[in-house]
Image (cartoon, rainbow, N blue to C red; front, side, top):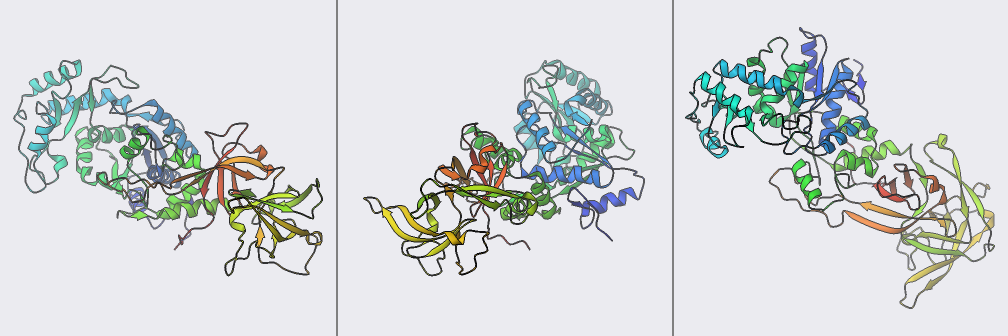
Length: 556
């Protein structure tokens, strides 16, 4: 069978597809998914996996996908996060069309369901505080015990809950709890809290409410209200599924109720995947905001220069499973290299300059050398690069006492300058401390690239820029942000002290003068770079290295 794909999502080899196809063969006509972020931080690469999965499944099966903000906790939410999330989803290539929803839009509906549960004797107002509720809940090996307030009358519970809404009680004084089973082997079913008191201003409802539903109560109701057919979430919600189903059923949504399906969340080597920890890095000033190019946030990856195509490809390659695992960060780097190798223009840039003077080249002469923009993509054409008497090459491309198999420039050795001539080193100039400041060479005018010269060959080809025409820029070189894999909430974060190297005087050929923020290039032999969208000005370009050209990672 031919494998169908939509936005990089295949329709085979995935247990979620099996569930959906099984449902579509039954009573279900179309699927309806949703991406339901909490607006309490910026999205990261793990959320990208969920975005691609939910929107991709809807596209693949001709269904719909909603963007819904689970904004039920006003103490941690902000409209800044809402705006960033919408931008991220759009940038990744997905469209929620007219289906933008907020959990807060359903506050009155949640309240009505809560009243229904109270009237049916399935919910009660509890005066235990948070610590006492935890003590009463029991453990995995021992049952919990019932709250002393569990048997309040329906009338008393209705009165207290209505007074909770009216704002008569302080934060933490009372909660509304479901009346299920304190002896259940699933702790989530031991009379879970449905509502808490929080005198906090909400970004959409203002001060209208001072009681807010818990996530485990609001989330299944949101799905049911919106007609979601498949509620796809990560594995930590697997034990919450019985409560999810209980809320949907008791609320009266019994015809084609949403089906919760769990998958393993993304773990990435040397990467923080906890929103709480990412927020700490921002608040403590350890990074340059949520969009710091070292951050695994979608905005950070975008600023660094990753493309939406590369991230969608990455999400497709890692697949979906129920087993937790940690993915090598090198795979994400592989995906951006694979995407840019035929897209990005190749330019010459010198990160650590060494002056090279061609002593027999005519003073003041300028030649425009015709060089291909990308050897893997002829459609990108060519450009002209000025060649002059004084150039810059990389420091590492010269060695006064060359080691074995060093094929670049050395005293008496001949190399080709990319797209130009053969040059031979004749002299080395040093300062008073013995540091090399200049390399002098002679050139052979008969060896110009494209002239058909074949009399002799050299093993080394160096990139270069004209000292008189190059553009001075700033280059930022990034390494993994973390030295370890802080994959749990309790693990310590150890930042890599070498996660950022800033080179203030990077010389680039003048073809990049018209570069715009976000433009991507391959710096010959130095990696893929992106024009920074935040710090670049009309007078000075800042480049972020997206990724180096090579990696030890091998695609299996």
